[in-house]
Image 1 (tube, rainbow, N blue to C red):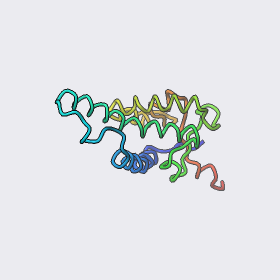
Image 2 (image 1 turned 120 degrees about the vertical axis):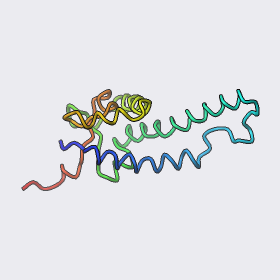
Image 3 (image 1 turned 90 degrees about the horizontal axis):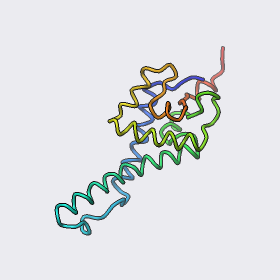
Length: 146
């Protein structure tokens, strides 16, 4: 297996952030400003709930992509695949669920979980370690060997 590099994974995350941004900006995920309560306490609660929802929906959709495709649109564009770390086979739905929970933790640590890629031999981030997955570069696997 040829593990994806930190920069490949960062580029894929950047591509995924484009569709995440579209969802957060253009899909109504919370109350409209007209329907939000006017009292400061109620407004604060509504705003916090909306922010949590707006952040969690893209991550949950990412988990669904992992469960269905074994990758995200950004990783797919770069021909990266998420597989079981031990067997190299497609990850299971259970691994996709664990990886999604781990992804929430990775983002909750202000992205520090991504830095693990730099220090592990299999280039695993926190969410990969939790789910026992690795991200591989499929171009290397399909390239003819000399």
